[in-house]
Image 1 (tube, helix red, strand yellow):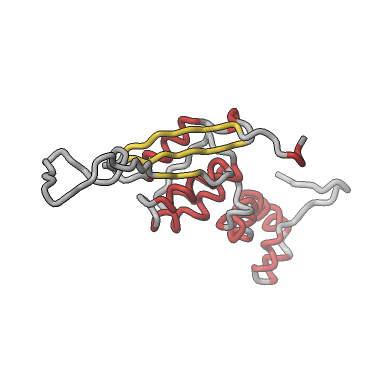
Image 2: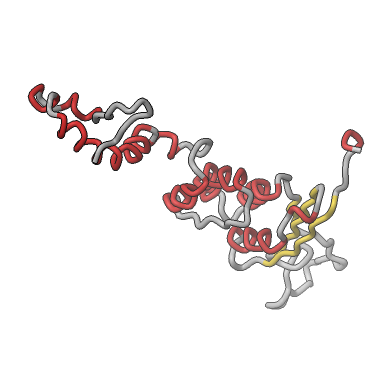
Length: 194
């Protein structure tokens, strides 16, 4: 089994340099080591470039789910690649803010590319409380339904945002006892974009 270069000369393994001089002179050993060099060369290439696999800017796309698993994140393949990379990069910080307005806003910003508007509706009570007023078990002070919030996202093109993905994000980030309403609006092009 001879491996030849383009000019017809036999190619000897680079591994010969690691052997004692006696073996370097043996023709068979040089050709035999080519088998192992050809098998191990791709593995050496990966090891030599291992740092690039852990950098979210240079990691291969197929490597992203594995990196995400390190931080307990299951990647949604429907997301664009750049946004998946950004999510993996930010997820540890997002875990700190889970269940808060800030955490939900940052998570939705990564997916949609715009900062959502998150509000808690406030309705002014019509009745005034005086010293003789009695409150029952079903009464609440303030306004609106308790534990409810609104999410409004204004994007350039609604077709670019998967509403189901947005709902999954909100469900995973909101406190369990809360409810929400979602509005996704088409903002349209700005003056400079026309």
